[in-house]
Amino acid sequence: MSDKIPTIKRQLRSDDPSQRTVALVLIGKSRVHSLMPDVIAMLEHDVSDDVRAMAAWTLDLLGDPDTIPYLINAMYDKSFGVRSNAGWALVHIGKRIIPNLVVPDVIEVLKDDDNFDARQMAYMVLTRIGGNSAYQAIQTYWN
Image 1 (spheres, rainbow, N blue to C red):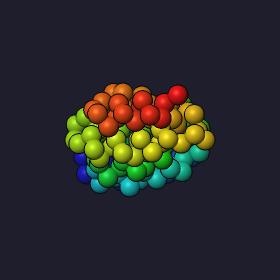
Image 2 (image 1 turned 90 degrees about the vertical axis):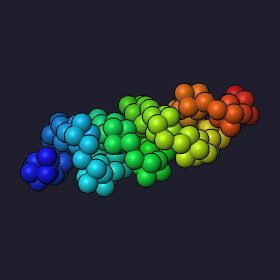
Image 3 (image 1 turned 45 degrees about the horizontal axis):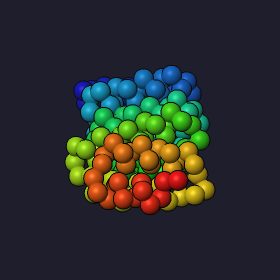
Image 4 (image 1 turned 120 degrees about the vertical axis):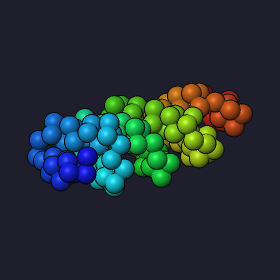
């Protein structure tokens, strides 16, 4: 796979969103952790909603807890696809690794009265991860 990394990096820099999306799929399916910073940059800054959504999906496949802060921020994205993929990535990281790495940050999103879309995704994440603190937060902060 390392011989394909220069090609993937070129695709990530393409002006064509579909090329960037293909590169993200390759990174995720091949578990190319060395390109995680590139994926995070795409999640945070790409102009295409579809590319940002695929970046969140790729981070889900990579499953690295270091991506939690970026996925939390993505729950505030204007695109439902980005929010959804980020939310599911958080669910999967929380279930696979340690829920306590994810739940406190997601509770903070649930408390945010200024962004209903982010709160709705936080509710979904907390119900899927479960546990006492998640359920208590839902009872306290979900209207």
